[in-house]
Length: 37
Length: 486
Image 1: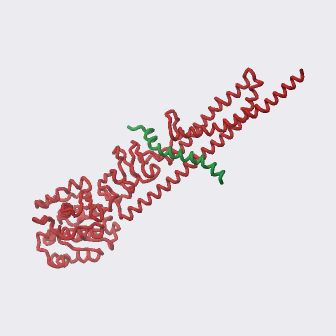
Image 2: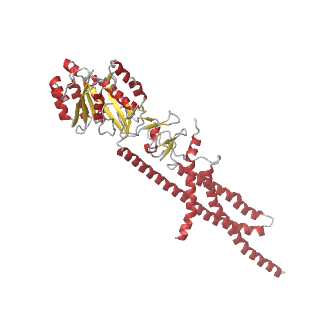
Image 3: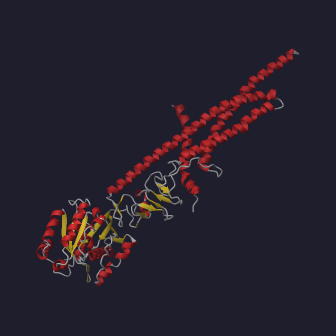
C-alpha cells in the first residue's frame, strides 16, 4: 500500500518547483517593469 | 553647576534626536525586510524543500467522491492549499520574529541598568518596528497576491490546455474515422476506460484531461498514466465504460468495422466466418497483409478455424445467447483496421423479439446475409423471414439504408453447380427467391450477391469466392486486400 502523502508529493514536486520559479521571477520582474514603465 | 546640567541636557536631547530616529530606522528596515524574506523563505519550504515538520493543509482539496482513484491535479486545488499554507506558516514565523526579537528588545530597553540610555532606543525601535511591520506585511501581502495570481493564471491555462487537447484528440479520432465499439455490450464507446498499469484494482473510467491531470495523471498507487489516445493511452489496458469488460483490441488506435452475419438456422454463417478468417490468415502467411486475433476470446474460438475447414468437420451450432464479436486486427499498406465480426444464432432472426437485442446491427454499415441454397430447395427454412426480421431491426435502429451495404451470400458453392451468369437471376429462377431479391434491390442502395464455398481447396487454399466476398465487404474501408486469388 503506497503512502498517499508521498504519492501526492511526488506527483506535485515539479509543479511546485515551477510555481515557485514563476512566483520568484514575477516578484523580481514586476517592480522592475513598474519602474521601467 | 547649572551650566553642567544644561550641557548634559542639551547633549541628552541631541542623543535622543539621533538615537530615536536611528533606532526607528534600523527597526523599520529590519522588519520591512524580514517579513517579506520570511514569506519567501516559507514559500521555498512549502514549494521546494517540503521539510517533514511542515503542517498539513488546513482544508485539503478533495476530488468528488465518484471520481477515479487518481491524485488531484496540482492546479485544481492543491496549489491554492499550498498558497494558504504559505501564508499561515509565514504569518506564524513573522509573528514569532516580532515576539522573539523586536518586542523582547523593546521591553529589555526599559528594564536595563541604564534605561535613560536604552529606553530611547526602545521607543525608536517600537515606532520603527510598527512602521516596518506594516510595510513588510504589505510587501509580503503583495508577494502572496502574486502567488495567488500565478496559481490562478496557471490553473486557467491548464483548463484551457485540457480543453484544447480534448478537442484535438476528438478531432484526430474524427479525421481518422475512429469510432470505438464494445464487442461484448455492443455500445459505442465514446472513450475507453483504462486500468492502472501498476495495479489492476484501480480502474479509471475517464482519463481525459480534467481535474485529475492534463497530459498525464497519477493513480493513487503512484503509477503515472496517459490521459489521451494522442499521448499513447491505447498502450494501457482498456475497458468498456458501460459494461467494464476489458477491451483487448486497443481501441482508439485504428478505425473499427462492424460486420454482422445474419441468416436462418444452419445457413452456414459460422463456416463463412471461419473461411473469412482462414483467407485472412492465408494472406498473412503470404506476407500480403497482417492479421492477428485482437483478443484472447477470439483467439480461443477462431484458432481452430482452418483446421475445421481443412478436415471437413462440421461447425458447432451457434449458441442462442447474445454473441460476442470476433475481433481481428487487419493491417495492410494503407493502415490498420479492427474487424468486429458477429455471428449470431439463426434463431434470433426467426423468433420474434430476439433480433432487437442485437444492438450492434445499429452500428454497422455493411451486412452479410447468408443463405443455404440446399435448405431453400428443400423448403426447410425460408430465408425471407430472417432477412425481413433483420431488415426491420436494422431500420428500427436508425441505420440509414441509403448508405448501408448488403452482401447476400449463398453458401455451399462447392456442393451445388454454380450458375454461369448472374447469381441474383439464378436465385430468382432456381431458388424462387424473387421476393427476397426484389426487397434487397429496393431496400439497400449498395448490394451484391455472391456464391461462396467455405472450403479449403487442395493445393490452392481457400476457395477464391471467399476472397472476392472479403474484397467487396471491405471496399472503401481503407484496407488494401491482395488482388486475385491468394
